[in-house]
Amino acid sequence: MMWLTSKSAKALGAVKRPTNASGLLTLCFLSLLVLLPFAEVNAQDNPSSEASKRANSQQWQQTLASAQGETVYFYAWGGSKPVNDYLRWAAKEVARRYKIRLRHVKVADISEAVSRLKVENGRNSAIDLLWINGENFNFLKSQHLLLGDLWQQIPNSALLATKKLSLHSDFGVPMDGFEVPWGVGQFNVMANKGLFDHETLTPETLLNAAKQNPGRISYPRPPEFHGTTFLKQLLVALSHDDKRLYESATPTAQNELLPLLWNYLDRLHPLTWQQGKAFPSSNTEQLSLLQQHQLALAVSFNPNQLAKEQSEKRIPDSVERVYFAQGAITNSHNLAVPKGAQNPNGAKVVINFLLSEQAQRQKLKGNWGDPSVITPVLDNASTLPAQQELHSSWQQIIEDSWQQKYGA
Image 1 (tube, rainbow, N blue to C red):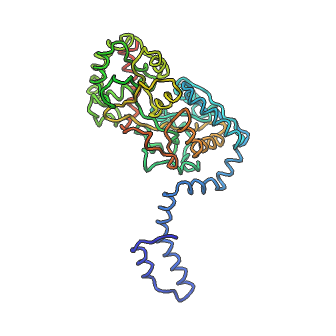
Image 2 (image 1 turned 90 degrees about the vertical axis):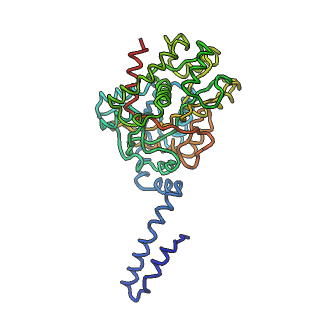
Image 3 (image 1 turned 60 degrees about the vertical axis):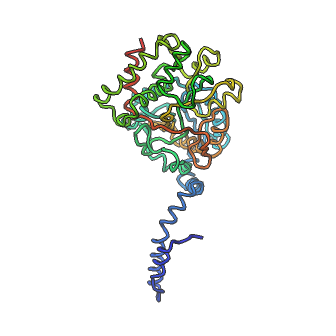
């Protein structure tokens, strides 16, 4: 039953009883005007119902039929065994359910795929599906190299937890339907107990830890995204969360804010692993150095990684999770379809499956432990206090400047 507010009831009650067919039609029309807003709210409050309605539409049924037999080439980072294992599971499910072959094309950095799409310039591409966010998304969107309207075309996008999570923009750039959120990343640090006195850290407490543990602190070498985000967390703290970090990086803002970071790193690097003359190539290598007791910490973008690693006995219980006092830099990692994809319908079906309750629950509860982005599987206990991601323009600037100063 649809409940009415008193205002709505009065609106209906004020309409006189119809005395002919024309009057009856008028009453029906007015009733619909009153009830339509409530129907819209009801749909928003029942995302599963809306997703089911879209899945049964003629348009989606045609997409499913066209996708059968297609091979979807999914270009995605291949540097994590839990992620790779999850995608192998997903490939089996997609093949069984939809007769689609999902091929994970592993890349060290998704910029490799972006460079390929840039050369192709919208023409026929071997890439059907991309795992992207941030500056890579911003570039592809600005160059009109992505297929649009994905949120409207993919039924399970109705499940996205847009009321709880910030899912409409990517590093300050509106998604506008050119990519679909897949999971949530939150920057955190896995550190030996006692390295920090509290569950939050600051640039000063990190520097003190490095002084007390010389050679046992480090971070992944930028432009590896964990390393770049580590620098962003420092910059947020050192600049006291300057609002210009969330806007396009102007020359004035760069000249005033970046020296705060470089001056700090000049103090930190001599105390770090290899005296700051070398850095782990990735968070995977850094984690290995932590496991070998060469380092006292490792960084992660998964707030559940430590619990997963400890449950598999890969990290001892003497390691704890901490995060920066301003909050963990938080962003969504997303899925997009190139404009020149050879199998766009297959790619859409894969995205729809990856947003299903089964796939999101497996991603959260399985070895990966990646937080869900859909309302039915949302797990508030697995998330950290959030810090807004910087505008995408800062990423390349920080990476290039770091390379010039410390990369030789």
